[in-house]
Image 1: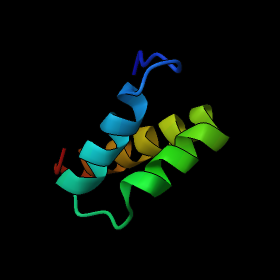
Image 2: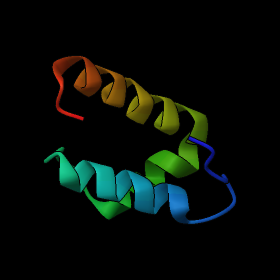
Image 3: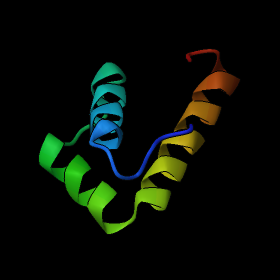
Image 4: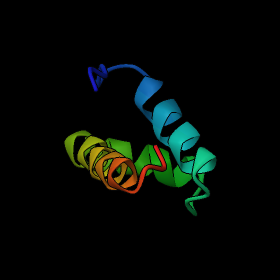
Length: 58
């Protein structure tokens, strides 16, 4: 996804994605997830995108 781990863009991207698809959570939980493991958080979004592409939702 070519995201920089040093910028706040990752939190914004995750929050926007979560909001767009009605995934429960909060900005605070997005921040904590990115802070704890940036790579895991990006992989989680990528897996969800792949599932949505297969269903024709993305």
